[in-house]
Image 1 (cartoon, rainbow, N blue to C red):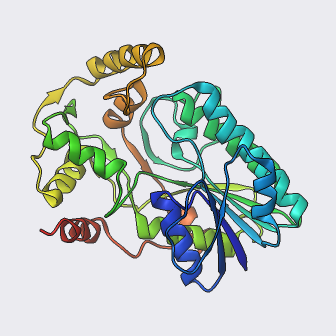
Image 2: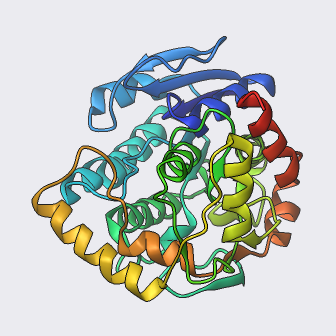
Length: 324
């Protein structure tokens, strides 16, 4: 197939475009700056430019849509313009262009309402109950994409959970930076179990979703994708810090205190936004102090997919990338 990958200048988008190419498909990418992926066709543009979207989808068979505004803070209107309106415009452009498969890259946060998720499946996206502007707008965008599923236009939503690996400047980069500065606390005991997903596994799951998007029982469905190896937050953070050669977090902060502090920081950031992500938000406090692990049986069965890189192998790759 000829496959358009949006957001390919980002960490997961770049890996996905390369995986699509390596699977034998012809890959085209769409983002504001060059993707840096060898052997693909780059199309420049933004999710708010309908003309650029039309050019991007012209002549393609399938779309993997990763482009989004991803942040813990920011103008709520920006999240709506990029994540909601942009997704709607891309879906419309893809259908008009005759695209037959559409993989929407979502997030488990679209179905998270603040309580623990232990062995959960992919619950329904709930924009009105999701926490934070990112989660709310991704939930709304997922519903737009899945509602467009119809014969000849197969739509699948993939929710990768906490993607990480060498070269990640977001999750891994921020953990390492804060640990080095002594600003990485554990909430409560750090015992909450969380699922994560190594980047190569995330990219291969996108290719599997493309392959199976038109299958009966798959199109029109959302799937959470993880490594299927839940670990305590403290253990996962310790592994990442050890691989990077920075201090392992030792300071414990009550989760209730972190949630209150996060709410205060959010209020301040709305009035006087900082130059970087806020150090804590209520959503982040909830994510670090409640269980988030997911039943992967349906995902693996329906997509014919399984992770090839274990958590321990991924940590070893992090260590090697850090020259350790």
